[in-house]
Length: 235
Ligand SMILES: [Zn+2]
Image 1 (cartoon, rainbow, N blue to C red):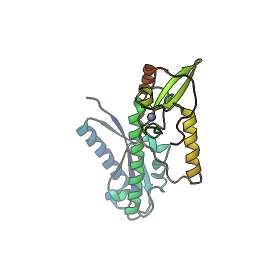
Image 2 (image 1 turned 90 degrees about the vertical axis):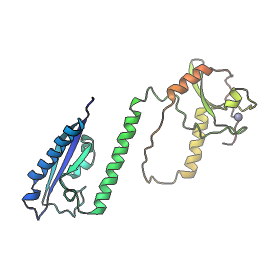
Image 3 (image 1 turned 45 degrees about the vertical axis):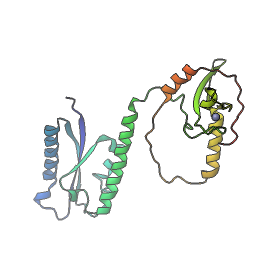
Image 4 (image 1 turned 90 degrees about the horizontal axis):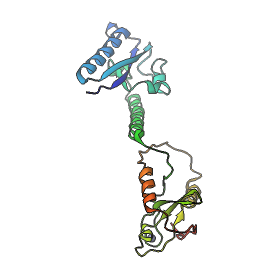
């Protein structure tokens, strides 16, 4: 059975109206006890890497602000833990709005970790990436264009190409140099959205087909000349 190491961040807070039941020591003890219990019941290794301590901080203060916990909710310290544990929820915050803010922010981080983990096995450089796959369609037959590779005088060229033309299925559209099509689409996008300011950074899980595309391109080979004429005027 493989056991994972899970880094636990404890957050302890002592309010002005503190009594023995919520002392920092008691909260730390509870957090360590939780980690031990989780380790024993799951077989994973829950390690308390740090317990942040904020004394005399009112529960009305945003959890992002206190000197003890605040820095652990931002990089670089944000990357040092995976699980946040508090003795009681009101040791984190008493404000629903702050709780929602912290929840959302941690959800975002955890989503980012998921994406990074999913992409951890990606292989090779992105030499054959095709941002317009499934976006660019053939102007003649409306089929999504494939991305193909061709060598010419020792240089590699990428082309978007209609599969119906390639397989001689009644389309005579010429292949389009990928750089040309991509930069043209980029210009069009900039013309439309170029004046918009950045509103939110979104990370989207992507699937990298570069290896398969490369193998496919090699299997197909280069059956055409080196014409770089664009056949599809509109896309
Ligand atoms: Zn076509």
